[in-house]
Image (cartoon, rainbow, N blue to C red):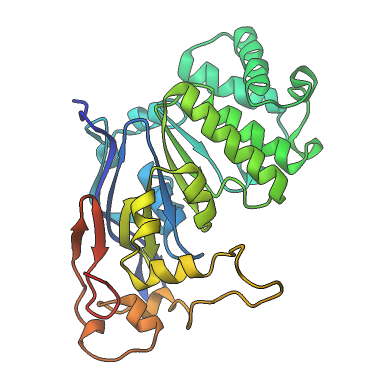
Length: 327
């Protein structure tokens, strides 16, 4: 049964990794939704749980250490976490396209890039090999890879980083997915190519009327590409809202700190950018209460009790720590 408004709904998702000291929760009771036709950005510093959240959505955590402990992930009303293997394989690459962070690890180094795209089409759309090869070339043209007929016959190592990322995008979009998950899709690329890739994803998503989850640490990328934003810190959602609302009225201290650390035109030349004090605690040392208070080395009751998420404006949620949130 399809939801009337949301394509994806994530409820109380909790994921952990086995370690020598026991289970370490990298994603701790995370909830958010992706409305149909919209792009939701998940933002935060490295190690805050963004990528683990993204991979948990399609059950791609590394085994045997990674484990989903609790929650529901509803895609068109169907719980991904309860899907049988066959249905899950149909979903990945078919209805859900995944653009991985590092294209060299996402591509098979000993297989031609055209064959890798064609394999996706043969598996999910039942095409013949010849038909899939022609469609693979069309996809490379679709993502504006120069000379796609020649590039399709090459191996990943022969391509530049920007070209490899376009191949990964072509693979992810080959089956016209309803949902695109893009995990830091421009990490290893220079600034000019980053903008080209992000503009390409945005344009193709609009052409296919797809929804998207965009993982990034860059609020500038969020502002340019997303409709809603989920701010994560230490495995939890600390704030979520529409992009315009969040940039205009950030309510959590961590969100305000992220925004203040962005470069601005009015800053004097060669001035130091503001930084967030303290450091993210190791996952094994996370407190039960407010983890941003932990970073700021505060003491007291805020470290002991987890703050609830409260709605401070329509569709604007914030973790209600009395010391970190403006309610």
